[in-house]
Image (tube, rainbow, N blue to C red):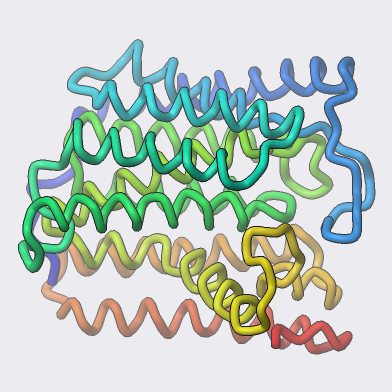
Length: 340
């Protein structure tokens, strides 16, 4: 069982106002951004690696990230300002990447510098790896995990709705479990609401895509919140909530590396992408990810609040994720797109 916590880490009224503000700003802001992107023809045009067939505006993440930053800056106290500055910096560079395309190496180095700066200049109160490592090594390894997570979160943004759904599940799980500080809980609430506001526009058929400007800073923010939970002692919650994304991305990465492919190149080999190629709609796949994510939220909450052995909770989470991967692979196999 995870460490006992006193409950929702924050003021319910502040959380409700933050949720409403972030959701409305994201919904209205995405509509405005959509109009501007269309006017300037900033479009994601289909290619052989795409899962869409119609040129679609890309960059809706501006509204999502903006909604989170504005809502918490106006309504929350005790915020990790260096983390918020890092979110803004990652969004700015990722926007340039969306517009012009940046080479992988300088983009990765910039992300690494931002992550290292945040981890060492604004460290967590506890140790992510529960005191098993010296402090400096704990911070360094946590930075590596955070850098990995923000990149896989970006790589997994490949069909309508999936990134919004995953953000909702992770943010909701962190808020309900009450395993991070009050300021961080409001960040999780804002991320959940902003993702819901964006999903109105991004659900199949998507009228706008998030783009790297959204998925990269969101991956960083959610990863940082998950590591904050681990540092507070709730390491099982930090493992459970992103378990599907970690499993799909990591298994796909290992498969591609074993074949000698350039793992940083765009592709359509994730389990969920293969399922779409096999005939499932974007909405069907995103709904299955949502169902799995909400199941993981329930397991994480049970591990936190009920006398459930942590190993049992982790086993239940693993079974749920493996079941989703099996379902997606079975869908892919129907037309020969098995996830080998």
